Image (cartoon, rainbow, N blue to C red; front, side, top):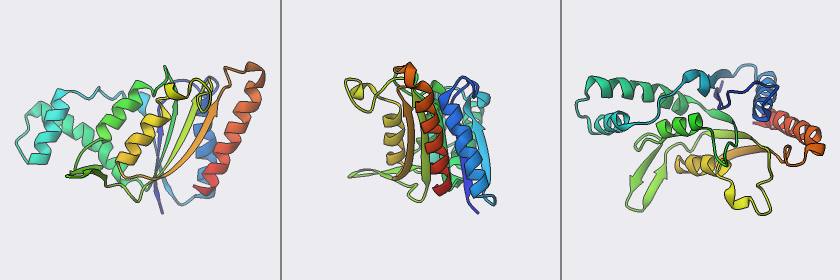
Length: 208
């Protein structure tokens, strides 16, 4: 039985959001294909994570050094460790997120800040950082209204790129990506583009 973590980083409804459509399509197919797996859903907008701040940084540093934490630092460390331990314990993680202003929503960036912890998800060596999460499998379900996979906007894409860079830092190379793009740029093709994306998410879930 696999521990599977579904992370949703979108506050909009399934009727409004393409990435939420991908999330539900993937989740439904995955549950049907893997009925014995233990699934946890994490809605980052419901969690309302505080921005990564100085007390958090100091607390995590002191924790690694086995130093005494202040009450505020302890509270912040406990919060971070709750999400960090949940991520580490998962065999598979699915992220569903849109592109907003060429990058990921703030809540997802904050969540990734929580996960970026030396000694847990990666470690430093004289030759650079080495990831520690090699056995984890990840799916990225992403939607963006414009086309960023080719053409003049390629260099502007900082959402999927941001996620992949962080995951590779953690040592995760087994990454499945489902991207829906161009549905706002080409409104006459919108329905077809979205339907194809939902179908791709469903198929990816079956083999994930």
